Length: 90
Image (cartoon, rainbow, N blue to C red; front, side, top):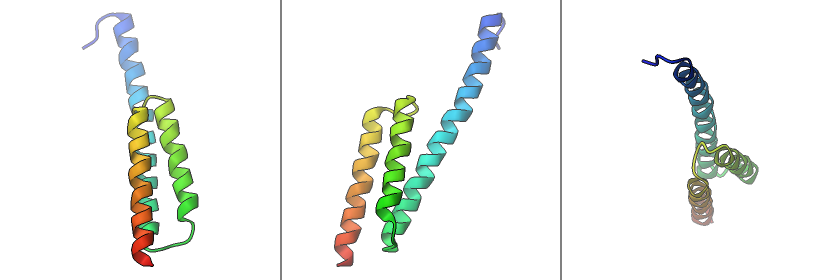
């Protein structure tokens, strides 16, 4: 348990940041699922939702919630999955 004032403040800051970071991660993960479900269902608007996902991933990387290479890896894998599902549909 924190004893000094500065340590108590750091605990408060960490708690706030953890909540924000978890919300950001949950947001891009749910967006990723949405994109993949749309791609599997061959629904319209996959590209629009993919662009939204890219935006959320870039925001998370910019705020250091995830590493920039991790964001790039997620984008690449989702794009490859969309492409393979589109090719399989033809």
